[in-house]
Length: 327
Image (cartoon, rainbow, N blue to C red; front, side, top):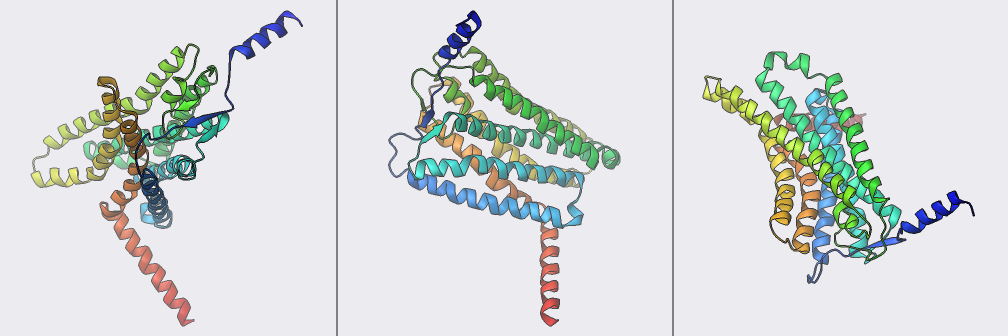
C-alpha cells in the first residue's frame, strides 16, 4: 500500500459516520401521542389553506401583481416546509419508527432549515413592498415590478440554497463515534453536530452564521423598514390617512410576530438559562408548524382583495355550473 493510499485509509478511519440516528423527541410526557395527532391536523389544514391561497392567486387575474407574487412565494415555502417536516415526524413518533438513516437525516435537516430561511427572507421582501408603497407611493409601480420582485425572490432562493447546503455539508466532516441519540423531533442542526466526538468548532461557527443570516438579519431589516414607515406616516397630516396606510401592514406585522417571536424567545431562553429539552422541542415544533397554518388564514380573512377574489371565483364557478346544467 502506497503512502497516498495509507493517508486515505487513515482519513476514512478518522471519520465515523453512523448508519442511522435515533430521534428521542419528548421524554417522560404522558399521552404525548395526542400532541402529534394535533400536529397532524395542523398539517392537513396547512395544506388545505395554502393550497386554497395558491389556487386563488393563480386563478384570479386581479391578484397577478408583484405583491401577490411574494404572497404566493410565502405560501409555497409554507407548504414545502411543512411537508419536509410533519409527515416524517408523524411517521416516526406515531408509528414509533424513530431511527433515521444518516443521509436521510442530513436531507431532512437541509429542507427544513432551507424553507424556514426562505420564509424569513420572504417576510423581509413583504416589508420592502409595504415600505415602497407607503413611503414612495408615486414610484411604487415603477419600482416594485414583477421583474424586480422575481429577481429578488430568485436571489433569495439561490443565496439561501448555498448557505444552508454549506452549513449542512460541514456536518459530513464530523465523526460520530459516540451517542447517536438526537434530542429533538427532527434532525435539527445543533443537536446533531453536538454529538460529534471530534472538533465541531466550524459547525458551531456556521450555526451562528446561519442563524444570523436566516433569522436575525431579516428581522433587523424588517424593524428598520417599519421605523422608516413610521417616520413617513408621521409626516401625513390626516390621522385617517395614517390609519388607512397602517392597515395595509396589519397582516404582515401579525405574520412577522407569529414567525419571529417564538424563535427568538427559545434562543434567548436557551442562552440565558438551561431550557428544558421538552420545552425547547415543544416551542420548536410549534414554531415550524403554526405560522404555516396561520399565514393563509390571515391573508384570506384580513386581506380584502383576496376575499373579493374568492367571492368572484365562487360566483363564476356557480354560474358555469348552472350554465352547463341547463345545456
